[in-house]
Image (cartoon, rainbow, N blue to C red; front, top):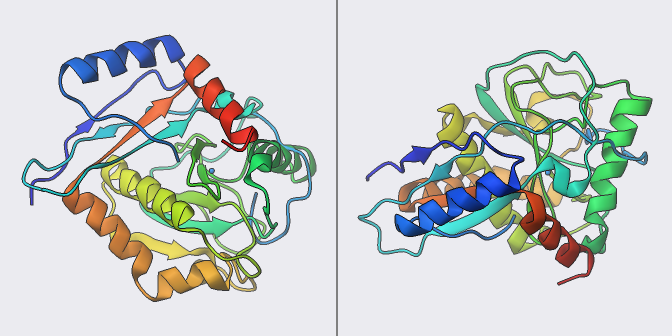
Length: 265
């Protein structure tokens, strides 16, 4: 297997620089994009906040030996979902493992995802006193991926585990009640595959919230089933084997994508 090559993007929240980088990638034959981030122990019924732009999102080029079509996607920058700036402070971290959460709040209509992320952030900052929304990335019901907290700052939780070193991904919804969509599973696998490449961690470091903390059913029985069966890890391994591309989407293109999500398109 030829390991995907990681290219670094230092302008996550710069729409103008992103477009020029995409143009350069197109000239070089680079891959395109498609789209696809509340502390899950308790329902975050509060409003959301906005955070500072997070670090770069790399491109992961596919293996040239694979005949499978490459999976590509975008990560919508913080500004696109209306994130507040992060508050001062937080615990610096180096990512060594990955953890899956759900919000424990049903999302029957994906058009409400932007308001939901803002609600989470307001609750986490205003009510919980955390520096930012608890997680580093989120995936909605349609598989869209959102950039949340800076991954250099440890996430937060209302449960009894130390989140230092964990890259926290939120699958939005209540999966004790709702089924997990195929699109959401694909988006979740994609962002975790990106994390494996970005941080140099193993797929086997992935755990669900209930595996690292007591007293929680997070990420819900229906999503947990994809952990215990090995399905989610297998999806991540497949992406790493065949190659994938995850690009940041910022500025006007991201605003247009968010408008389409809110319109149900």
